[in-house]
Image (cartoon, rainbow, N blue to C red):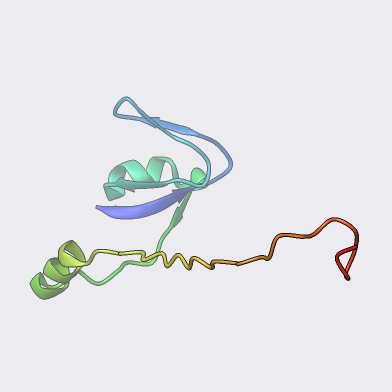
Amino acid sequence: MKRYKVKHTSILHNGSLYKEGSTIELEDSKAKRLEDFLELLPSQPAKTQTQKQQSKNTTTETKKETKTVEVKTEPKQAGGEDGK
């Protein structure tokens, strides 16, 4: 089976709707009948067992740092700078 990109329309195949721009996998005989509405995607090399394991074990962690700043202020005195 090869992978195709749906173009110019939506395709209903095996009870699933594939909208324009989505990818679909079809056998050559079925793709031939829909060739005006499909664009063959370049084949991707099959992943090796090691690559499959690495993709399963990869996790993304996001660390957030929070910095707390304490600001000390002196109470203001009524009457201005000289305290009067």
